[in-house]
Image 1 (spheres, rainbow, N blue to C red):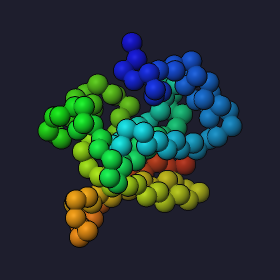
Image 2 (cartoon, one colour):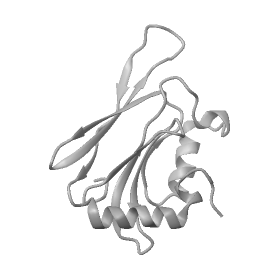
Image 3 (cartoon, rainbow, N blue to C red):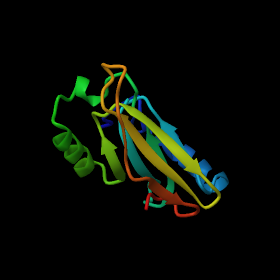
Image 4 (cartoon, rainbow, N blue to C red):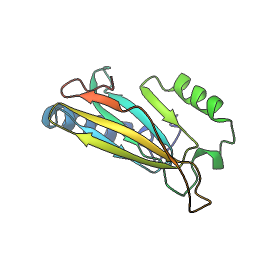
Length: 141
């Protein structure tokens, strides 16, 4: 049963058709998403288990994320998602911020940036190590 009918898992046949189009016409596909307002990165595999593309989900700058309906400590939230999502390579459910992509012919590098607060005008920005997907590999290294 799909976890979220408004996401990939709610449309398995359509998802497979999109991945098939990527396989045929877009050798280095990168999917960007943002509806969850949380940070994550996935390797996308087809039904046969072949790596086809990578997907990055951007956090929101001000809207709340998972904390509104899953009030768990960050470590528990991430552990639960990572344990149940074998294609997931990165997740942060509670941070507010954005993602920056550096796209070249050789690779895409995704770096998540987070603000220390959204409640004040003064804030600091923290950043993650870039997540890299090299051309032709279809996975996050």
